[in-house]
Image 1 (cartoon, rainbow, N blue to C red):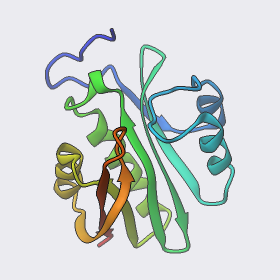
Image 2 (cartoon, rainbow, N blue to C red):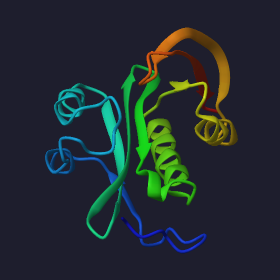
Image 3 (cartoon, helix red, strand yellow):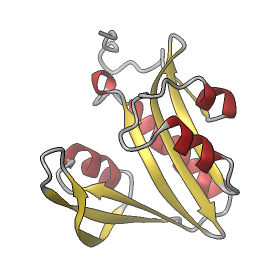
Image 4 (tube, rainbow, N blue to C red):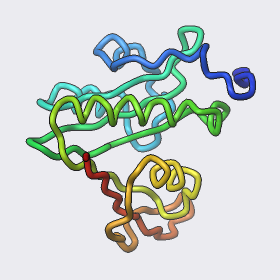
Length: 157
């Protein structure tokens, strides 16, 4: 098991812009539900793709990945390994991505989130996102249950 970060101390975690070396070094199972290493590599090579990784002791512990098209962006995947959640790693990844997307000129940022992921939704709302719609039966659970997705939007001021 990976060690927990000291309370309120994410200084050991390095947040950096995602690059091809990071993607090639991913394990095939990585920590990114629904995204294979191949899918991430394929999307990374598209125009407007960008992301950040969280590293601790040379281990990848989180990733956020998005694309920008004209003046809009969409967050495609965002995950922190479970043992590192609720320790500020996700917040730092999201803030770095939002800052970079703004720097590159996007005016709106969208994402979809499983409506049962309350902590993730709270992070997005606290970061300035608003719920704009719901996609019914968008996700399927491992038991085959249908789960709604919330669509959130962030408007750059």
